[in-house]
Length: 126
Image (cartoon, rainbow, N blue to C red; front, side, top):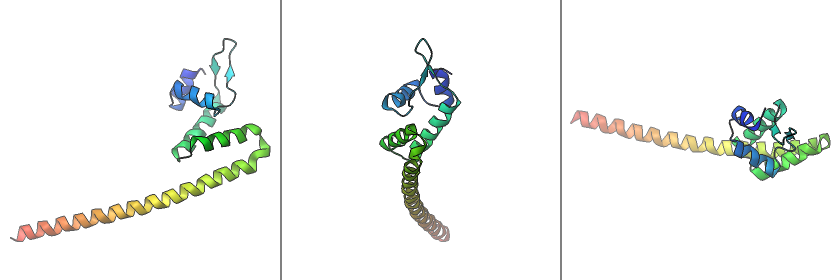
């Protein structure tokens, strides 16, 4: 597929895909004789993984590190695993913090609801 089709399939813009290619996240993109980029199913899978990493808050520099290791092949499996494990640990810590924040918000909301209910009852009795 060409870059427009690929961008649509990945829900990214062609500009973003060119940027990813320029900084090294896409590796060597196949090209037709006329120089136009050609993408396949493996590219779709790779970009989907990159999007997942981004969605979990992985910085671009870490994504680049992972992409570079991936390009080096199977000899880097341990390093890639370690990178993903470190990111997973950071993500888990962030999720725990977000859960604590959510509990605090819900507690405050419950307090307000209780106060509103008490006020409504007092108003009704007067």
